[in-house]
Image 1: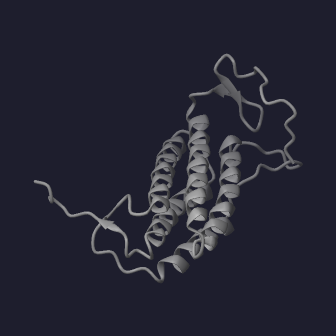
Image 2 (image 1 turned 90 degrees about the vertical axis):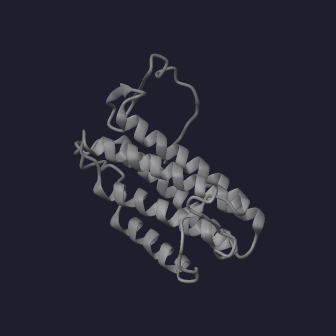
Length: 194
C-alpha cells in the first residue's frame, strides 16, 4: 500500500530521482525516461476513458478494460522503476506477468472478431473517442521505443516489452470499435493529394 502524506520532498531538486531499489539516477536517464513514457501513456488512456464514457453504451466494456489497463500501467511503471538486478526475496519487485499479456491478447481477439477486415491503413480520427485511443496508441508506441532502447543497455523484464506491444495493438482495435464498429474509420488513400 502506498501512503503519501507529503507531495513534494525536494529530493529531486538537483535533477535526480530514486528508483525502486533506492538507486539514484538523473531524471533524464533511459530507465527514468522509459517509465515516464508509461506514465504519459496512462494519462492519455485516461482521456480515452473520459471520451468513451461520454459515448455510453456499448463502450462500457472498453471503459472497464481500459481502467484495468491503467492499473497494469502502474505495475509496468513499477517494473521498469526497479532494475532486474534487485534480488531481495523478502520484498520481490512487482513485475508484469504473462497473464497480463494474455489478457490483452484476449481483449484484442474479442473486439477484433466483429470488425471488418482492413483494406487500407486507418487515419487517426473519426469519433473523438477513436482519436483519443489513437493518441494513446502512439504514446504507447513511443514508450515501447524507449523501452526497447533501454533493453539494449540494461536487462528488463521481457513480459514488460510484450505488454506494451500488445497494448498498442489493443488501443488500435479499440479505436476502430469506437468508430462505430469500424464503419466510421477514416482510411488512407495513398497519393490522394498529389
